[in-house]
Length: 312
Image (cartoon, rainbow, N blue to C red; front, side, top):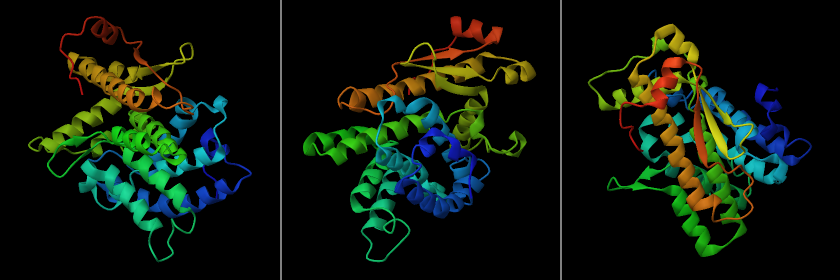
């Protein structure tokens, strides 16, 4: 069976190698599990499935994140593709793991590779590859430790590499950074896979209020892409159709600026811990983010924002 994403560069790159066979094997196993999981079926939860989220990330990796002119190895792209496939796998069964899913995802892969029983992961991946994937998954999102303190997992990956200086730990840092960036850039209306009127939020619950705000930010962004004239700049294209249909207000302008600031913060994290410290990165290194809009009210707001925007 073939899929639309098979035409994306990050998957086509694996053609004529054992890696495409191994990727297809793993995708055949985990695609269904992700699409039928709790994080996809829960009505007020942002999609963490395969057919929307992972597929979006493969497109983002292919068009924006990976610099294929640097000729990364097929193994590197394979490991990245599998890390994408498995980065949210633990939430397929339990949405309550959201705060720790990067760590839990790492342990999911490690437990599988070290199991005495043959399973879907250790039958396809060798231990070295699996450990790189596990570390990359750990680095893709910050977690809260046992006392509620946020841990920067990408910083933790770099500290490990700084100690070991092994090629595997270096690659884990780079794949973790690429995955983290691509995951963050899947913050557009394409992330929404059901009609808006099907989303129901309880305004009395903080978790629901945060979910509603995040959902609205996705609605307002049409696309995030590499500026064709500036290789180190990302552009956020606003969903101008939404403004034409529903009007514009300052709260919407604030939300767009929050999306921009969140991406800037991730770029600063990725660059400070990985891109500017480890040579030979196979992904593009971005330093700035600009908002692109053709809505006059939005442009006026961007030129003169009226509120102090939250810094993440």
